Image (cartoon, rainbow over all chains, first blue to last red; front, side, top):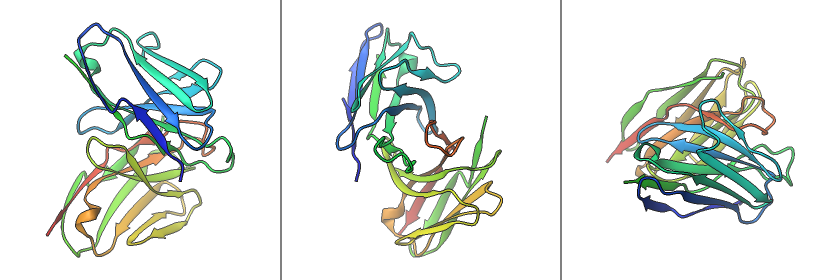
Length: 118
Length: 113
């Protein structure tokens, strides 16, 4: 089946630094990828929709200058948490749709990245 | 915006027993997904339902979408320790797959030996 990878799986950084998280579709192309955030014992919240070759679409309340998204190729989207603070500590998960299967709507999820900001 | 309410929030079931998890939507469900998650890990896709009255099964797990497309249930038969985890229902707002999913808060399932 379709595989989505994320890197890194865990990252610890100091407050004020920036962290980049990669999301890759390994065996399919994805014109659209999605970024979610999950706080401890909470559900997943959609942060933004990443579109290949164009600007990302952010959900209400998500700061686009804080969470920079780049979808430069059909297999890679990156999320950069800029000037990270402890409240940004969370589990970040991406998902992707197979653009080669326009009638198949399943989203394939990555394994997640746990960010801890000290 | 669409909201999904899952019940129960947590469930402790003796191994071998059956159980049901419910997911109720504030709006019509055009695409309803069920996922399983181990805490701190990614999501494992279970099933996707799109049509009213649709029912799908995989191994010992059966998911249904009601005729009105506002409620879904996930039923596990003869539960096993491997079924333990967090079950999430997610809705595609448009059904076209172009949007991110809205998730319920999850149901934490514990299987007692």
